Amino acid sequence: MRTGWICLLVVSVGVLAFGVVVAVAPRPGDVLLYRADGLASIGVGLFGGLLALVPFRRRERWAWYALWFYPAFWVAHLVGHLPPGKDHIHQVVFIVLSLAGLLVPVREFFRPNAAR
Image (tube, rainbow, N blue to C red; front, top):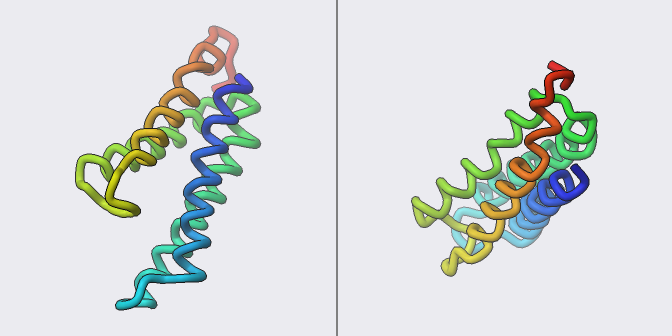
């Protein structure tokens, strides 16, 4: 279980850190759009981190389902060649981490006496 929530927390911190960088130092061009994207990323990182730290660690099944947003998000970024970055290595790393975070503890969420 510990491995799962730590993997998901690492992904959350990565998203949050990206958001802080983009919000504080946006690329030249449409500064307001970049700042808005940065603030949205901060929110996603905080929300995912809180989900991983509280209900996921309590083995609440709804949190396990909700955190499937991370691998879906990163797969969409990889397939769509979306930013950030051009090498996309970080996207593969975040896909692997989020899948590991969800699949390693899967039995904890689907035991016969697991919380529903």
